[in-house]
Amino acid sequence: MQYKNSLPKNVVDEIDRMFQNQMQQHQQQREEYHKSVVARLSPAARAADERMSAIDRDPMIPPQQKMQQIQMIRNSLPQNVRNELDTAMRG
Image (cartoon, rainbow, N blue to C red; front, top):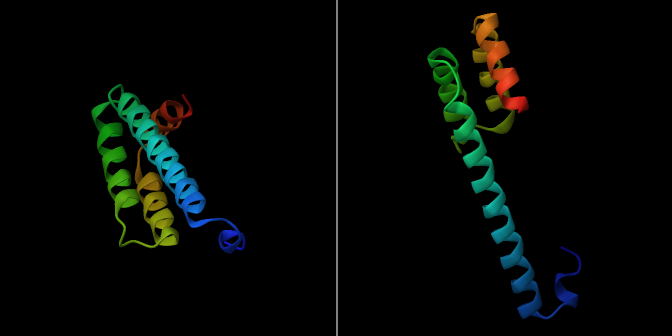
């Protein structure tokens, strides 16, 4: 960050703390929304979502590989399950 040296450390620390707090709140909201959507899915769609979510949560898998693995799972699903997931995630 190029401005880091121009601001007092306590200001930078406070901005960083606020940012981290905001990111954590956003993540919690996202997880709560996801849980509410998953609760309404059929068993097949729920199982597929769990497989894809497990990949997404794995910090050892690089982002590009996550996308590929999730796409492979998605492509292997019956059309009705893909449609259900698409509809549910759109809200």
